[in-house]
Image (cartoon, rainbow, N blue to C red; front, side, top):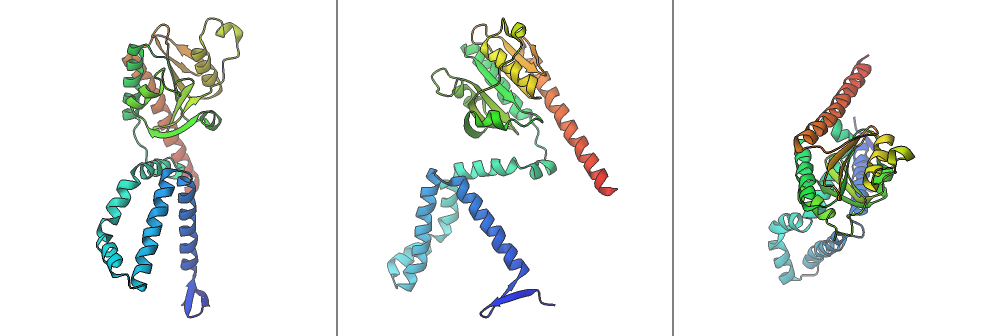
Length: 273
């Protein structure tokens, strides 16, 4: 049985044709929004011009241009990947952050933790202060939007660069969510209890303030004392060694992973009933 809905001239239009058009329109729209205003948009415009020229050249009998463009077809894919490598990386990270993808694929955070630990104790050795937020279940959209969006892979080199005193991003905090540095120079809420905040610096007050309002883990590197602290659930744990901090971060992320796994099992059980 034909699934043709209607015809345009001699072309039959089916439900799958409409679905195909809608999906392609959505992909083009999202891609346009993703690269709009960036250097990639200019390069894409140049590629579109070349593609249009490759169609017009044979029709206009421009044999020389047609020959060049035809012989370059084999390198178009490689050129596309090389030219748009940063944007493709960002797009893949963005797709990987989708909740649907995270439901089926759970990436271990151990590599991310090791990069953070390396950066934290390198910062301490250099005498730099730092404020690093590790998001867990509670959303941190308002905090992320208060800073400068990065959406970069977590690396110790990048964290060191951000908190270098010469960097314009060193004030405030960085937020790591889903193994990605979402933003830098973020503003955190300060702790409100006057007595608790009496002997604390701004970084420690900010770490406690956010840990009181959310379930995030906040690492503080003191510029004055060089001590590494961790704020969780409104409590500040001072002067941690590398092994102590590693254990606490792994435990915190393991608890979140266990909760997510339990929620998935409950949802599956509910659907089966």
